[in-house]
Image 1 (cartoon, rainbow, N blue to C red):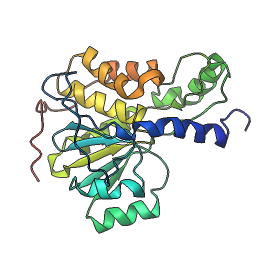
Image 2 (cartoon, rainbow, N blue to C red; image 1 turned 45 degrees about the vertical axis):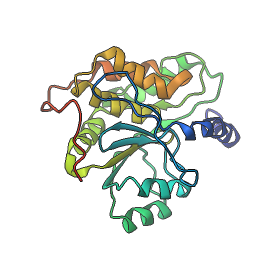
Image 3 (cartoon, rainbow, N blue to C red; image 1 turned 90 degrees about the vertical axis):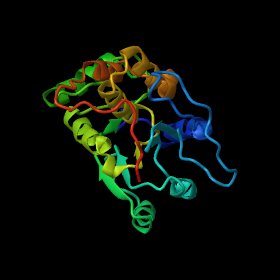
Length: 238
């Protein structure tokens, strides 16, 4: 058990991330890494952590809490894609039910190791356990960042839901809206024929100093041949 971060350390990380509540900017899907002006948000409407518009009818964020329900209600969501493996909280389920929102859950586990643990050792242990699943892990040395096992088949299943406009407007989220969400959005960008540089720039814009080489390699190597061509931008027809 001493190989994992303490609850206090994780709470401290959450405090640092709270500043990202104001990040509600929207990338322009037709101009690669060019971004539109900030969305106007009323003072009594609080967006989820790291909220942003991905495309017409597609949004991304960290895990929504009750404080952000009023804001989410204004989006007229039909669906939510959750990339967290944990059971959805009861109050969140009640919000979905009362607003006719369908939940699609594609749980991708994340594990935290003790800060200072040599990731050469951790990577060897993790890779040995999950290499048969086609997993990707963080190869950076000495970091307290979670090692997220990005599973190709789950990203593909999530993409099928994401690309179906009958599910729009739609919100994608993981815990903080950075890594797992960033990988799913990055794979969608590949299907939209974004250049790799712009895909990775968008990923880094949310992950910032916590960007993972493993995530970037996953997006770079993701095979899009099994998907039909999709539009450069969605219509957001409700």
